[in-house]
Amino acid sequence: MTRATILGGTLERVARDQWQWRDGAPAPQVRDLRPNYNFRCRTEWHVTASVTYVEVLATLASEQDDLRWVLARGYRTGESGDHTGPMDLATGQRTHIRPGDDPLRGHPLDADILPGRPPTVILVPWGEWDAHWRDHPAGAEWALDAEADILSKAYALGWRPPHGYISRAGWRAPEEPR
Image (cartoon, rainbow, N blue to C red; front, side, top):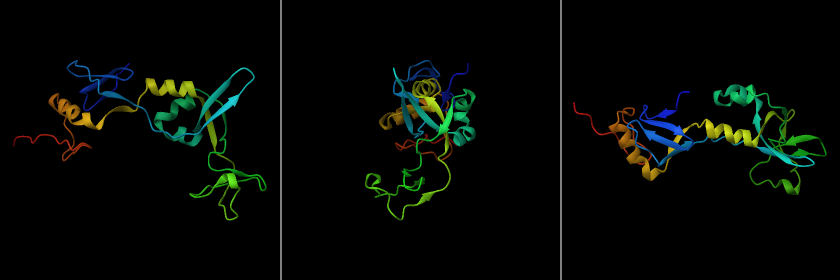
């Protein structure tokens, strides 16, 4: 299995939330980056237990390479548990909540009606979702105050940033001799 690397291969992932430098030195300030998907969750209650699922939009799972594993595992599908807005019980139509609307006070008379049915979702058990991203991080991250040290070490080990690169912390590559 190929290990994940960043910064031109100067940092390598050796285990969950453990990264090391190409020269073998540990990089304790570096941790796994989890993707920032903001999917709705639902909990289904059963007689003896409950199961929480992540509602992954089926269209997104088919379009995003890093979500294709959801399709491959054959999880069950269903309609979103109202992913895009509350149902108006009087008309059976979904409405859109706008900033300032209070859905607990009922639907405003001029509410935008959303056409069609709620979107199809793939129901991924929360534990499997979490385990997948622990084993397959999207990359690495670190605190802003550690960035200059990290980039300087990567530079010393051979990483070269794009021309004119300035990091979030203001780090720039040293001037190359001409």
